[in-house]
Image 1 (cartoon, rainbow, N blue to C red):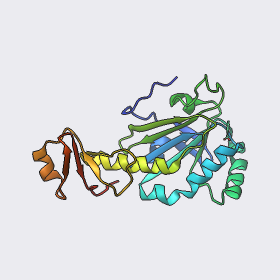
Image 2 (image 1 turned 90 degrees about the horizontal axis):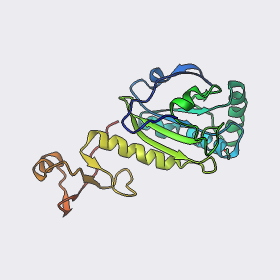
Image 3 (image 1 turned 135 degrees about the horizontal axis):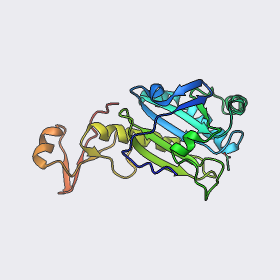
Image 4 (image 1 turned 90 degrees about the vertical axis):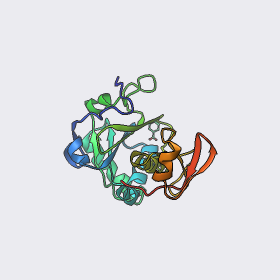
Length: 214
Ligand code: BEZ
């Protein structure tokens, strides 16, 4: 079982995918990345998830994010299933799906949780930064489809906080006020946040969202 933690290097791999043989790091280049697993091909929740991700292509592109999916089914199965996803979800799958029949990548990333299911992957999501370190890990059970709006929201937060000394409060969405990191002194904050900030408590200082870099 993989013991990956936030901040660890995302393991690199070569894999057979629905778009040919791919080296993960080469595929990511300098972009942000999402690697996400689903339990099995030809299953209802997974079909809606992959269709949703394909339909969010522009949202991922705007954020400079490349997406790769994984299941432990084979290439032939993926190819037939992609046709169903395109047909039923009114889309065109536009990202590679790993055919991880030998479970090499699933095991590398700890995507099989034996007490949930010892043969299929759970719904894991890894967000990987341009430095190839793991910025976010979320795990859902097979019975719960993921909320990809939440994933976009978290990516906005990750990208904002990677380049600015701020953090995003509960339920924050792009464009809303943020909080100044506790490590920043008031003297530094005066220079760093030209739009100003409001001190609610000495540890709770609110400022308009700085510009987003990706
Ligand atoms: C699904 O994608 O619908 C699914 C897959 C495995 C178990 C339960 C649901």
